[in-house]
Image (cartoon, rainbow, N blue to C red; front, side):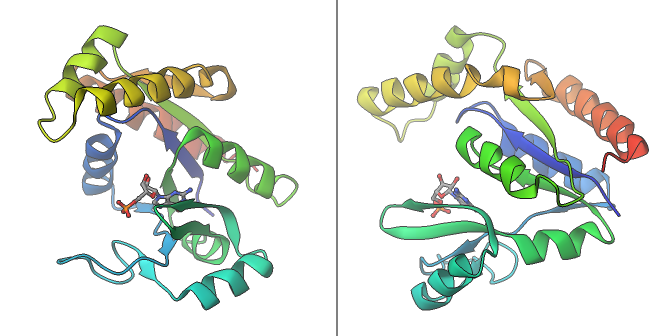
Length: 191
Ligand code: 5GP
């Protein structure tokens, strides 16, 4: 049985890049695949990017308690499928990349179920640096950047609820720190 890692962090902090590097390096790690009711975008593969399911199926599985957490974004439902995560955990350690609200819900949903997730927050070296990283994304307006910064402040205010906080200053260093955490926690086998 593997260990479940929940990785959170504000937009622009580089958590997606870090998670991809970890998965590439360590074949015993699997990334959780969420369910969504939105249509696939060009290049997205069912079962890899998401499990693309109908609204009816989503609502039925939600009723049956198959989502560790779920949310609605832009009129579509998104959820972390419990059955998929538990199946993956039989042979892999699993990474969930999820926001602070989802992380708290996952922890609650798994209480008493024999799986204790390890929560890791990825933080920027400073608010100024995060602001610079977000401003570098040409696609976003000043208002969007401000909203993301406010959201980032909120997410980071929850870091005491996490088992670890890893500062992403140098990407390689952050990756190595994460690898060490993962190795340590895997060997502890927290049930
Ligand atoms: P997109 O449609 O662009 O892939 O994702 C839209 C939003 O849904 C993003 O903010 C993404 O983080 C969020 N999202 C994706 N999967 C899940 C999930 O399993 N649970 C929750 N709560 N949000 C998700």
